[in-house]
Length: 400
Image (cartoon, rainbow, N blue to C red; front, side):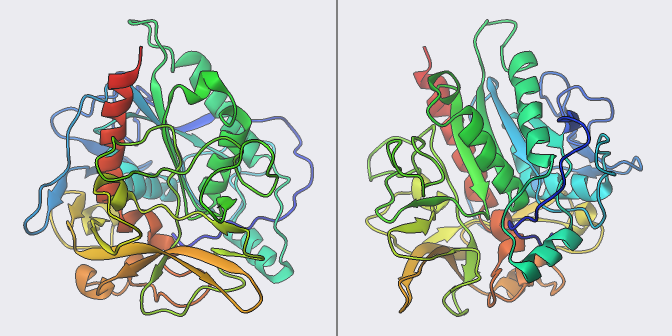
């Protein structure tokens, strides 16, 4: 789903934050298919509002090691979807309702994670495509609406009712994931409830605010509470040296552009005025397989099939196909003549040949301000799934 992270100004909400769930373990007719314990059963299925169900099985195309496995039973995922609504969902001041596009987005972006964590995904009163189009014209970049408050309220509900394990009496680990407008919501949530808070950061397995502007100092080291230009004051970007363990409690973020496109400049998802700060880029593949420097390394897309999307994608059985190493990528940094800095995930490979379907979001041309925005998560979803699994195992092994 094509979306941007810019957001317009709203009037004051008529009522306070609303808590409503797209996916929650044990939810009646849960679109994510999980029971109260987060289990998917022998034949995992996602469910759409009209009752249609789709397979959540992931098959692997060609040779590859597949996905790693680990005991992540005490880890949850908290996911916020990107822009899906053409019209307001719903009229301001009432509780949002599940729509088919919400289900499509969470399954396409987080479906392979459903076997790795309990999935909590709130509905929220988001900015619509129409509102975002107006924002692009007016270059408005602020958010005064109720949607992000809905996300924080939902997290508080989860934290008070579901994060504390009734059997062990311990709090569970949590992974935060969002894309585009959902990435902005996750960034706000991290600032409001995690950044500088020892109680919650102790439970943070990892944070994945994808396709949004996570601003960090140009040396990639997060500030220590004195840098107002940085998105976070205490939460670090994930980094791993060769031979070091998988990092936990850190941030993975990037926006993707095709290698044959022009360098992203002013107006792009990744441009920052001045050279002291940049938009974060962390390649999840290099966290799994660390290299010296920012080398171009293989990445593993996971693509939703036509059975799941209803039209686009490979015509193959199951819900997803993983293509290990089918593409490669590295983080790139460039500074223009005016001192503006861009930092992005540069993707190499024939995207259309990989999919065989020009209508799929991966085939969106890499040029322009958005680049491969619609496919940010899809491009490395195999790596992200493995990373979450490895981080969950590491977090589990280090908890008291």
